[in-house]
Length: 61
Image (cartoon, rainbow, N blue to C red; front, side, top):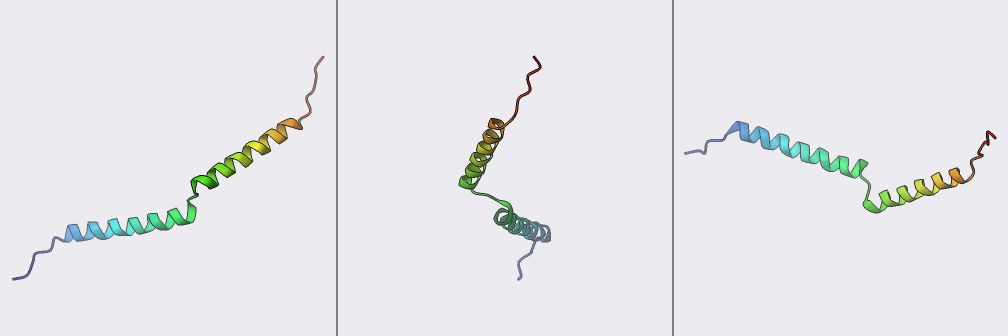
């Protein structure tokens, strides 16, 4: 005798595996490592402080 296959379970598992595949591709395409995030934050902080150091302040007195 053959085994009964639950089609809903099969469909859900197929959809789940497709979502996992898409998520993996997105992590590779858009993700950044922790080190890259820290470097970017440090560069932004340095650029902000450099810009603030070169601002001309107007005295209203």
